[in-house]
Length: 233
Image 1: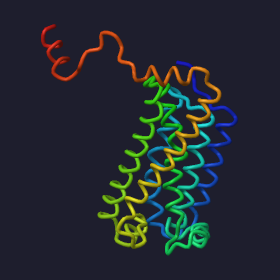
Image 2 (image 1 turned 180 degrees about the vertical axis):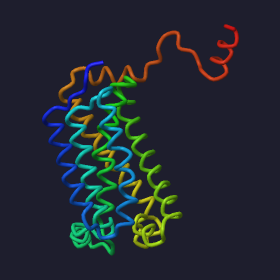
Image 3 (image 1 turned 90 degrees about the vertical axis):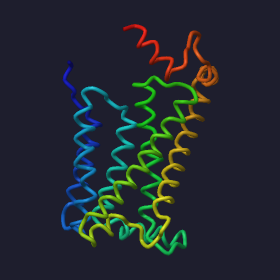
């Protein structure tokens, strides 16, 4: 297998993230929350780096992923409920809470839906409407999964760190609003991508039409597939 060597641009992205991460790791406002937030960084950063030899994202996807990761570690430094820019957003929107976590949840969908779509299009070779719906569906699922992880971690962590990690700021509907924002961000990204394809891809409408076409000879799965397997024995 050919050795994977990150491009200069990809190395710049990596070192930029590492620089921000080192800053965020120095005297975080709540060390316990910083550690909880960074478990995801410790898990997913190596995965992205190690899988690069098998599946190399586009520079666009790597850029979007890096921006999101930087926003996340900034939140880990202050805790999401106390990021200074969040108070600026709070004033702009006339909210009664720090809005940084709302921004990051929206950007989770807006920034990561495109890399997710790239995986679906290149690995699963999905086309047409499914190349827009499935990335949205998975992004929403990942958002819900994170909310579940957030709840589980907060319930077993040291109380003050758990509350900071949860970041609900007294809003009983915090999880639902966060998922709504992530979904809204993903929808906006899919709309933008669809409009770009509509304008520049001459086969856009043909591909959309064919994505609803059932191939000739297609058969139901479930018990039909099981029966065919059993008959082959």
